Image 1 (cartoon, rainbow, N blue to C red):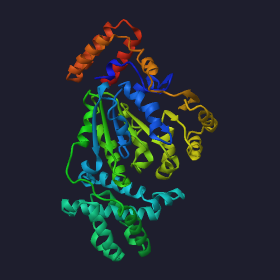
Image 2: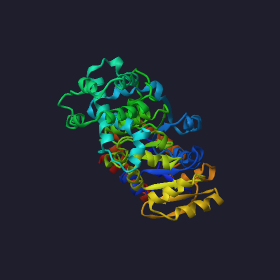
Image 3: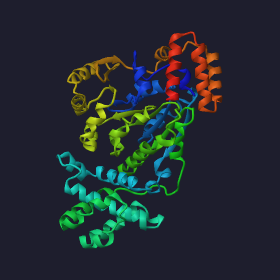
Image 4: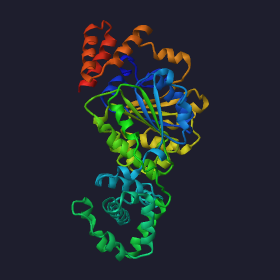
Length: 451
């Protein structure tokens, strides 16, 4: 259990950490804005990984972060695992009920360019075009899950169905898909079929064909990727889990939705080390269903989400009005050098902070600084958190024990097998620790584990 004896916190800028009270009390989510991942890695991610605060689940594009990290952190005690989502996850192996069916329908529709444009123009998810398309895809997937053999539960088979439907009329669709088990909540929307017109039906089919025609199937075998992410919630070993995404928004965003909805439930009563979910960048993942609710879930206060934006306007088109909710509930933000003026413009609007533009102009003159946003605290310009030796030493000054004592304590903590043994050890440290700062740290940890 590495976080136990570190007595450190998330570094934001060179002399500023996230508030310890915030970090221990609820989700301390962070956003970053930059044109490239190298800036985020050197000036935020790498220095914090070296602090050994917790484990990371990193949703990676083209192995960009894995290539930066793979040989760097093993000496710090991290176990590194890398998974290619193309080889290790199949969507239809994880669509086991109506909630998962609706999640899949949501990510298909919200990753569709015509639907994004439709919503961006001010329509809503209860407007007829969205409702019709939602209903049609729901009925197709319910049919697939309930009636089709497992080997036909695939995007390839859905595309075959869509090609057949495009050659037929609405009456044919009603005949094949117009009946559904009354236990499904979608039953309440079936009245739409009665009033749907032929041209509206064809328009919905066109939308589904457009997005699903670009979506192909991944591996069909079950693997341990979900189980290994779930295990982070019960073990006390530091891990870096890299997930190389497929580049297909429907697959990638469904996977992230599934992880966010299910993995933290593995054992929410036993607190392990903090888990950082890193999206690099968020907008390339695609639309993650109910993401605004998931990252503010107070049951998950041991989780920290790091949302990196390369192109904020793309994220706005993806999430619509939900992006305001997401940004409003993020406590800390970092803006690095960017040549994308819209990133600056929309960050100002989303945070309601008109000073950000002037600050961004100033850091472009001196690239050793960044703009630091702290919710309900004045936004400021600060020296970057860097990887150099001086900052590393500064980050370790709060741990006053000797190297040998730290190693002994680490071995002792790693030998503890149960949550009860950990709590007993913390009680003894609270009673015996003469240093008031360290004693308060042990008290915070004790409260974190027993609540």
